[in-house]
Image 1 (cartoon, protein in one colour):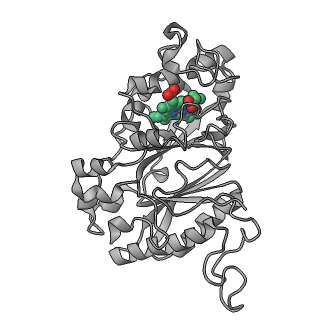
Image 2 (cartoon, protein in one colour):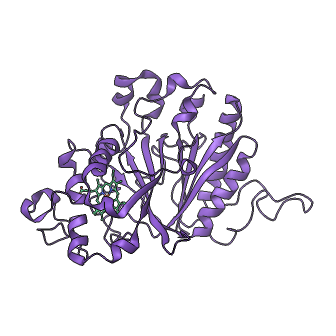
Amino acid sequence: DATVAFDGEHQAGIATPVQGHLHFAAFDVTTTSRAELAGLLRDWTVAARAMCAGRPVGEDGAVDGSPLAPPEDTGEALDAGAGRLTLTVGLGPSLFDGRFGLADRRPPALVDLPAFPGEALDPARCGGDLAVQACADDPQVAVHAIRNLTRIAHGRAAIRWAQLGYGRAASTSPDQPTPRNLFGFKDGTANPGGDDAATLAEHVWVQPDDAAQQHPGAAWMTGGSYLVARRIAMVVETWDRTSLQEQEQVIGRTKGAGAPLGGTHERDEVDEVDPAALPASSHVRLAHPSRHGGARMLRRGFNYVDGSDGLGHLDAGLFFLAYQRDPRHAFVPVQQTLAAQDAMNEYVRHTGSSIWAVPPGTSPEGFWAEGLLT
Ligand code: HEM
């Protein structure tokens, strides 16, 4: 049965191979007690560890408890196996606002994202105190995980917003064929490989020196990462009326092979092709590390289709997830450039936004964010 190890130096669900389905949930903490917050993360970790091993929640699971009590596990994933489930927790800036005495532990890299030109954010799809990213090969397994964690949180935290995604839009492993986003283009080609430890250490994992240099109170983040999650609506009807040549010039890659314009193969380097062949306003030219002091991030987004918008259009897009060592040097400057110049802006609209400090992984007896909360 396909399981991904839960405990380790880093949380699973970042550099581990991407699964087929996503259920992402943001929570508001409803208790004001720091002890209850720590208790919630402890209870979540125990349940998450069980579910990622393919076991039900609680000692008696879904069917072995008292017939007179509601079962501990809701049961809909009973026969599904672990489905390579990963559960990854994140802490939002608002968790450090003073309610829990954590204000002096807020890492400087956990910035409040600035406003970007052209975004159309819906407050009901933004922010939150806690997040759980559930990824699995079976959507029922991912939904079951979020449902049971929500149930465990009752009285301590409540869902603020959630997003389902499917058909991973990005790959973290060169062994996986690069999947395609809803524009029909390969997405994730230039990602750092999940087994490329040196690149991940440089661009994804928070290093011991980072906290020491910036803010001693943030040392608990060593081995963690920062996640930016953006719900980006894609105006597929307009895109679908655009010529193939125009589409390729917007992205800066060919639609078939995914090669940078001016190159031949998918893995040809964007900054090594004939610059005259790659439009200055193309997405890959503007997002490329050479434009941003070498900054890279690990993109792990999923496609979504949330029905229709009631006006005859699909409500479709990309739930963009990007992990990085410091958003001040990666997502923020890259998105500032894209928002100002990207030819793709005509076809996308950012409707949701959040940023999360993703703590390091757990030891087998440990719990999520224990370095912060104990
Ligand atoms: C590359 C699509 C939003 C950052 C790419 C590629 C595609 C793509 C097709 C080329 C293949 C690859 O290397 O993965 C999209 C779509 C978006 C979107 C459809 C929105 C709906 C964003 C955002 C950011 C971003 C918001 C960051 C602020 C990047 C980066 C690369 C990239 C860093 C790699 C560039 C390189 O090193 O060659 N994107 N993207 N993308 N994108 Fe996006």
